[in-house]
Amino acid sequence: MPGKILLTGGAGYIGSHTYAALSDAGYEVAILDNFANARPDVPDRLEVITGKPVTVHRCDVLDAAGLARVFASDRFDAVVHFAAKKAVGESQQKPLDYIETNCTGLVNLLKAMRAAGVFRLVFSSSATVYAPTLDWPIPEDAPLGYASTYAYTKLMGEQIIQQVAAADDRWRFGILRYFNPAGAHPSALIGEDPSDIPNNLMPYIAKVATGELPSLNVFGNDYPTPDGTGVRDYIHVVDLARGHVLSLDALMRGDGSHIVNLGTGQGYSVMEMLAAYARACGRALPHTVAPRRAGDLACYFGDPRKAERLLGFKAERDLDDMCATSWAWVSRRSNMRQG
Ligand code: UFG
View (cartoon, rainbow, N blue to C red):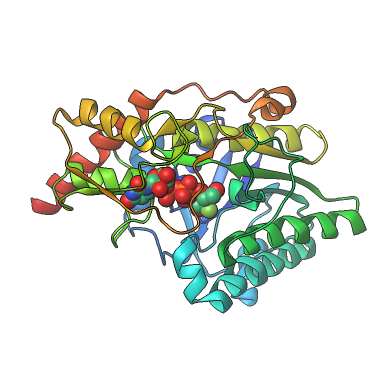
């Protein structure tokens, strides 16, 4: 058995896929989640996927005493930390909530880990920590910055971890900067499941495909890109999950701390995404061209080479797989809701 892992936010979109990947790789995993943005039946679904019972600690990262109890209940070898708030727009309305959950929550976790003698951490960061740039693909040593409170909390999180590790050489961390996650598990039992109207492109298109939303607003078709619409680096969530396993493997075998992009290095436009999803669901999807969204860049994709060099990570799944698995998940889920 390679080790016992505490997975905070393990019932969420990327967290649940990472649970499946870690379990597949032989890790013993316990979930810590407050279920604020996760469906209560995700652990049951993970039991079906893995064929094993799932341990869940219902706990908020702001509950320091609760965290201490979780660490006292078991002997963990490492933590993979997802539990955080993640909506860019909401972060502008509620900055203190974001700073509290994402930064104070992280500090609470690091203190609980140190008290329990657990010094390996994989941290869910975001490509949003890069300063807006016209230079693509973006390497890890590109200038950093933030354009939202959400981005600020991720950058702050990275810096908190590095400060703590600089003061105590027992710490080893993997900071993973994601580009745009898409797709779902091949079982169609878990996937992205926003309860509100989605802000992000893929879950929005998925709701147009199921008929829950009438039409996609394409935010701008006059960008300096081949078809005028925004280009992003979409990465299959199953590949992203495997990136966490490889980061953890590196920490478990005693490799040094690392900061890496998890992306494909390949950009797709909004119109390419829409066309790929239409192929997956078998019908043309309604869309309307709308004004540009404030703060959006024309093009954004990462340089994936460092993750390949350090961790052996390379995204394998293509756009059609992202759309096909997303469609399998959302069409099954909306049938379940109707039934
Ligand atoms: N888009 C539309 N219509 C929509 C939603 C999005 O046309 O309804 C377009 C956007 O303009 C953009 C592309 O689709 O060109 C992707 O937009 P997303 O909102 O899906 O993703 P972003 O790249 O804007 O945001 C993502 C993450 C954030 C992160 C940010 C920067 O969702 O958490 O990357 O790294 F902060």
